[in-house]
Amino acid sequence: MHNQFKAISLSYKNAPIEIREKVSLDEASTKKLLDMIAECSEISEALVLSTCNRTEIYYASNTSKKELLVKLLSLVKGLGDSAEYLQYFIDLDTNEVAINHLYAVSIGLEAQVVGDLQIINQVKKAYQWSADQEMAGPFVHRLLHSIFYTNKRVVQETAFRDGAASVSYATVDLVQELTQALETPRILVVGLGEIGEDVARNLDNLSTKHVMLCNRSIERSEALAQELGYEVVKFEDVALAAIEADVIISSVNISEPLIVKKWFTDLHSHKYLFDLSVPRSIEEDIENINGLLLYNIDNITAKANAVLERRLAAIPDVNSIIADAIKEFGTWAQEMGVSPVINKLKNALEEIRQAEISRYVKKLTPKESDLVDTVTKSMMQKIIKLPVLQLKAACKRGEEESLVEVLNDLFNLEKTKSEEVKK
Image (cartoon, rainbow, N blue to C red; front, side, top):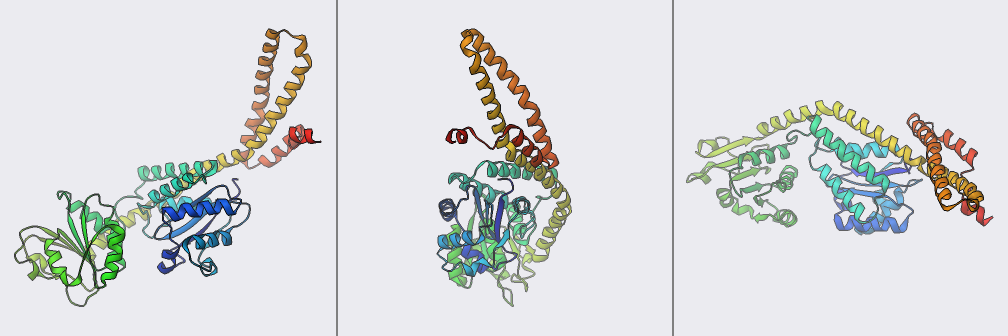
């Protein structure tokens, strides 16, 4: 098993959002895909990870199953010809590459926002869904628990997960800080381009909020609002919504300021405004109105860049922690690979013990028979101890195959008792 782990990966690095959204999987479709993988292939362990930035399938197989897996994914999503999507999936067809990639993705090294805080939770969900469908065996269980422990070390021992490292993350991070005293802050997001939509999605992580979406295309607002449970504001009603809001986040593409001072002349409360537009969409001197506090794209970018620099500086430490975890996991996986040989050796020696005891047991009293059984079992445990220790030591040196071959020859381990009976 430990030399059979593979993966296929489609991500923001090699596929546009139009493709990523077509192959994106929710819980129901992920579980359906796992069921189809179990039914249509010899794959016994699999993990499906799907986020807004990637769709990946990790699996155990002697050979690459890229074409089959993409075909099954296409069937689940009703995409028709799978060949259209095959080109976007990278084949990670060696054990080492697939394992290293899953560690890097889970920790956030492969994220659009380096150190993405959400990815590890998405991996945990993927693992749970795999377990629910009985597609997480000993290998996947051990691998994922190793990854979760590695993530814990990264959080505790490095600055890799500190703060918010993108404009949208940094904006939401600051909104959370500024609105701590408000029970349910009313947040207006104006403009749902790439940044605006990203902000809206990140706002979903706030525990309490009332979010209003406003966009020239109301269809886009309605679709996102339905997905996230937000309120839709018509573009012509943006001024009224701005007056009601505690926080206004604008990333609308416009040549002249959309949000202006005159809207707030009768203001009797504090408001926080975030202008993420270039050109700016909020009047530059809007802070002349008492109670209005404005943050522009430069303020937010500086905050994000400072965090990103700390995260990038922490990457060597993160890689070192991951390398330690992969080495430890590799040792376990190799030992798991020789466990069948250890069991065969134990069974072979037990057969010898039982055969010898059976020759004399009729001449012994019950008490003597029990004593012989106890003594011989103790002897067998001592005999088996050294080969097991030697096998584990050989695994660490990468020399287990030669020792396995010797044990097979010495004890004829490949010939099982059932095979002898058949003969």
